[in-house]
Amino acid sequence: MTEAWEYIKALPQVTATVDAFYFGMVFFRPKQAKEDFYIKL
Image (tube, rainbow, N blue to C red; front, side):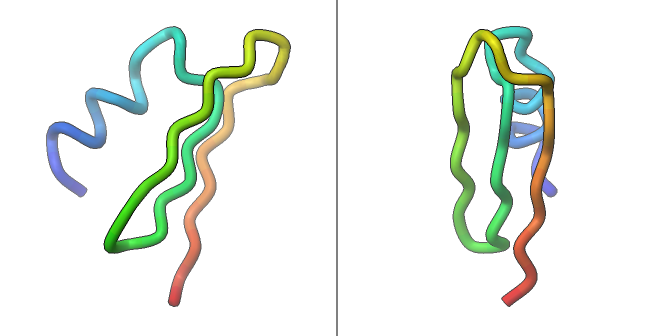
């Protein structure tokens, strides 16, 4: 993990992240509980 990715995941506006090793997706859904997903390819 890079420091930038950890910083993004820690932002209060971010509710879900998907880490797919080479790329990541960030979701902003106010009513969703905070979750981090990892996809191993």
